[in-house]
Length: 302
Image 1: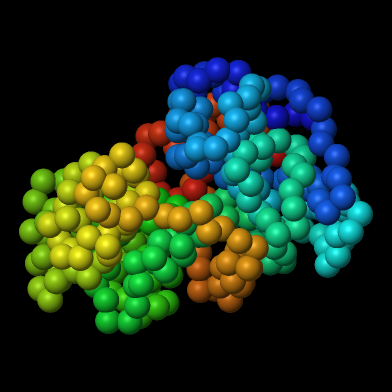
Image 2 (image 1 turned 180 degrees about the horizontal axis):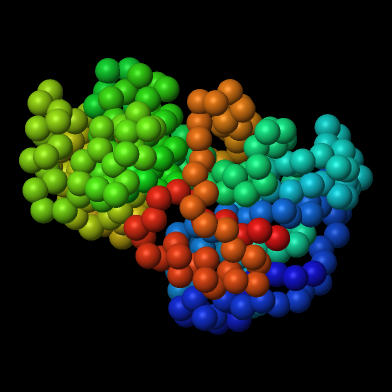
């Protein structure tokens, strides 16, 4: 099958089109013919040499941790999933490919009205945001700051926090402010003076913060939020333990994904796709993600 993989660590150029053996579903597994796969910053980090704890280093390494497609093989002992079912799901790797084999508890049904590109880029950002809000205990009456609010995780966090009854302040460049308003956030421009600008918008203080940018954004969060246990970073893991702030736990699940897909189906959760690339241009998709300034999601169409 066709895939996009690395044979060494490095810049986007090391991510190349390859042909690898087509996987087969074993007992208790399903195979999915992938229609679209999301591109995440963590994919770029792994390509650049970041090691995921506990996972072997093998090459070629097919990247990608979220996908959507059609079930085309069902292994012995699997119930509740049939060939031809449209699903979206997640895995640690192997999603930049034509086929993937996963366990049934890694997928949920795709809402009929959800386009394939949205489905392929839905899982990672929405689940990360949902997990983060749970860890931060964001709820009604809270004032919640989301840094990099126009990105895939940030936009999901804005919408989910608003559904919980929180007031959301989202940091982004000015070109993305109208987009944030459409999601229900109060936009503010990042950069020098950010803390003062946020305080002017939240005279009663800030209760929690989600950092999707790292660096100065995380430092600003320390100034804005008194309780460091209510600060979570998805972008500056190296400083998290030193500063006493949270990072997201590994808690993705089919049940969580099904809940989020239901919110999409009801119109309560939107996902913006900013760019689509064919599988053989995965390196260009990585370059796009690494600009770190675009709104919405980048996906590969398989």
